[in-house]
Amino acid sequence: MQSLDLPKNIDIAIVGGGMAGLSAAASLSEMGFKNVAVFESSKLAHIDGSSYGESRMYREMYSDPVLCKLAQEANRLWALQEIKSENPLRKEHGLLFYGESWNEETIEGSIPGAQKVMDEQNIPYEFLKSDEISKRFPINAKDDFVGLFEPSAGAIFSEIAIKYWIKTIKDNGNNIFENCQINKIDENNRTLLINNNFEVAFDELIVASGMWSNSLLEPLGLKLDVKIWPMVWGHYIVEESFINDYPQWFCFQKARNEDGGLYYGFPVMSRNKNNLPRIKVGIDWSPDELVGNDSSVMDQPFIRPLKDMLDKFIFNNLNGVISCDEIFVSPYTMTKDVNFILDKPKANITVFSGGSGQAFKFAPLIGQCLAEKALKKETSFDINCWELNRYSLT
Image (cartoon, rainbow, N blue to C red; front, side, top):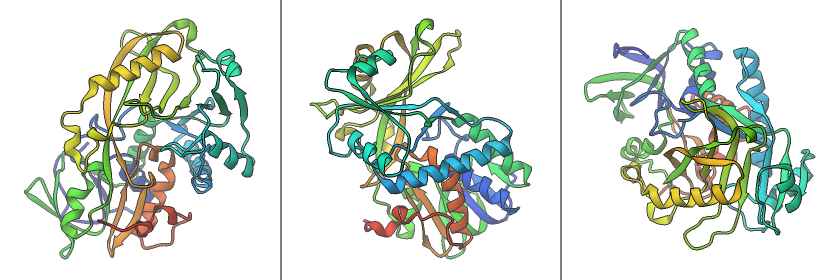
């Protein structure tokens, strides 16, 4: 983005150039603040981070009524950002929750829990039996499967959203610095040590550095109780005749042996370099032996068995799939309750962590709340469920 001609003083410094850091900087920029800077250790939305990729889901179908309401607020903010950007940032095509229906909650909720919340909040949906799912979509639904289809859900064009936030930040006179490794936060002197060579002073600091957060926060006595899950996803080439048929979906199944049972997928939203249509699909769980406490778990993720399980599920459950085009492993930063951390644990340090693969749909709300926390304002939304004091730091 820019050369390392770093400023000596920043009013609000943001560590991390992913979804949370960029949306916070964009929100501050829209509020009229000028001396804001984002510091990213690599490239923006790089392949090793959690914000990489072309698409994310948005929905209101949650088993948790609080998250459901926050998702509704986030969708309202997305709509406002689309007006400002003069470009679509989302595509509405619905979302199918389907599979086994049991009352135990997973990291994505449950079918009965989501149905209960949508009934309570009058969110439109369709209840589908197994044969109705298979008739409507190219999905081989088992006889005992049921489904909930939320027509107002869809996908976020995450790459386009990131470009919009970058433009908003720069158009308002603020800065983004790539290839800036933060080596140390000096809380007392309010400085950042960057690339072991530069010191930048700040008045307020937002730390939104994903799985790398604890390496910066632990020296300050703030070890967040999070785990890192390597999560496998990929693009699969499909037949041209099916390109308009695939839904956006979550499949809920109970864990059986090594198979955690949760899978997800998108409609055809892109083509590969050979112009072949493809769908994005993934595994929504990670084996215990791959889960760790820090970024080192991503050094050598054990992909093959997980890809084999993803292949098995996709080829057995979806029609029209030809082959796997490419496979990726992305980090999910997970809290105990699979909810986010957005809080101000120090007088001038605000933190976002625990995105758990779900945070992008809340991005405008997360950005606004991070900005308000940094400015010592009351947040516009009730985010008590994301406060640190809901459980103890380790």
